[in-house]
Image (cartoon, rainbow, N blue to C red; front, side, top):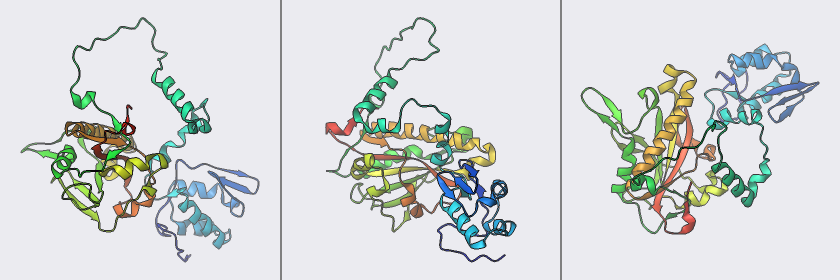
Length: 343
């Protein structure tokens, strides 16, 4: 059956799509619900479409095998499932993987509570002073004889950075070089650990205009092999629209952004699905290494984690095996008290 392609970004009638493990569905009479979306005209295709998509199928194959349904309505439905990331051609984002866990966790708190600053502070204080049920005996106090070096003791997260000066090229190079690859005649090693020694996280840097000495603003790919950066996009412009409201000031005042991109081609052949889990751990270890390098140079950073990556994803030219795991903002430390938080 020939299907006329419609204008939907990323939609290909001959590409294999799979039913997302994070997507739920149910049929109630003539109404089909997929996640939060309801459909009536195509309810009869379930559960057949679900079973076929679990094993992977192209839209053309689905159209052919479900030919009893109106073809226009069915194709619009399939396109909608692709648009809403119910039918997916590759690995999921971290948000898609983990959002289903909230259904399995029974929380005594409601979402509205976290919109109230005083309630959030009360919640945070309670959680930071928690005790574990495993504490069965008398606590034994530990003695710390010496203070840790400053790169540990003075660590803070910054929510504002100083924009009055540029970050020097020398300092920028020193910080980013913590991710470099070190080679000798018989081994390859890095400054940080990685599961299986595979190092599957790709690094992209977005440098702000006039914030880093000798580096024009733009999106760069970092090569750990040559310890160099190369322009990844000549047209990439990242604005604070790609960030959530609470993170806009962090982004607007930082000198550069660091994007940790998981490349499944590196580690999934060996570790299968667990490779994604290991990659999340790798990203955390890398942020720790970056934090230490930044503190040695008296530079601040903030792990902002999630963002509206879809707004800028096209500039990265990622393949289907690459997905954003984490984001960090780096900049000159500000003396403004509002810039500091102790988390």
